[in-house]
Amino acid sequence: MIRRMVTNPMPQFPAGFLWGVSTSAHQIEGAADVREPSVWDVFTAEPGRVKDGSTAAVACDSYHRYHEDVALLAGLGVDAYRFSVSWPRVDSPGGLDFYDRLVDALCAAGVRPVVTLFHWDLPVALDWLERDTASRFADHVSVVAERLGDRVAKWITLNEPAEHTLLGHALGVHAPGRRLMFDALPVAHHQLLAHGLAVRALRAAGAGDIGIANSHGPTWAASEKPEDREAAEFYDLLLNRLFSDPVLIGRYPEGIGELMPGDVEADLKVIAEPIDWYGINYYAPTRVGAPQGAEIEFGGLSFPVELPFTVREIEDRPVTDFGWPVVPEALTELLTGFAGRYGDRLPPVLITENGCSYEGVDDQERIAYLDGHIRALHRAVEAGVDVRGYFVWSLLDNFEWAEGYARRFGLVHTDFETLERTPKASYTWLRDLLRAQR
Image 1: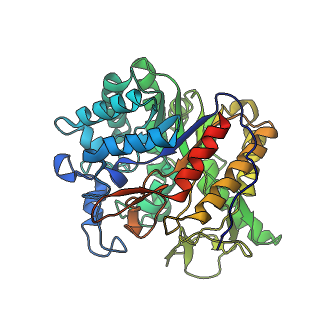
Image 2: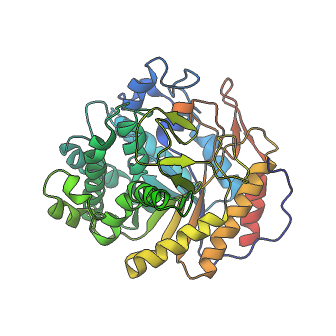
């Protein structure tokens, strides 16, 4: 357990550095009865899919209580709020009206809207195994940009296509619940193609300041043994480079392109459409070794599957309530490594998610976590990495996907019976940090 008060002054970040918090539509909005269903609604309705048997039908009810959430954002003093638009809600009568109201409220409060256009809640009629879904996504993006583009500060095409591919389509523990293993690779390709088409659609609508939010973390070999190093390199390729190389340098890692569907070379020209910045979601590094048996662990979950690697424990590190190791310095390693790998091809970087799950309102563990990671981020800036912003995950305790309501990532406590919001100690700490930065 981390249990200490943070007292050392935080180093000063460059002028114009963007501070924000992040959420996603399916995890906080609720109001499922006034939108079309998503693959997550179908998935959570199946017994055994979510650990506590819950759904996001109500969640934090931010659809009806967004004014409370905007007031919390204003009180926190963030520059920006990253939220996602629900594709099924946009497809519903009056669905865009909600986002119109939310964006207007944010602008009135002096908080810049940062819109994620896809955060896993795919309409049930669509399927990422089908190439046409990428084109349908571009149409969706055009509709949203036409309505909100005059007020949105930044656009994020996709959130974490790696996790959506792996957990939803390869291992089956997220929606839509498929266990395709390596036959899920077309899902990755079609999402990346959707990203490129979305960038083009946003540009055509006159929108700018466009990025993507990919999850990344350093991969550490369990030992210097050749088999452990080989397993770690494969894991790094699958979870990191598979989703950054096509976007940033216009090609897949060696051996991957020929496994993808369609005219891959033509698609890569679309996928590598220039972006204005690159978003990184960071939580922890991963220690990887050669296979040891039929089970692997990922994100606190165990899977009885065969893969050419095994995720190992990172010893002598505190862990969050989710069981994730707390390793702030790995964020510095990740960012300097990215800058070294991609050089001039890497645009300015934003940390689009970073946070932790801990119980309690007096959440000193979360304060220590955020303090350590923000300092690690500053060290990357000092090392010359062009980092332009940092977003905490998350504003509110919310529906944490297959974990249901058992994990609490929020700066604000949500009572899921009364829906009352209570700022935690970390909310006050971050508010004071932001005041000091200014």
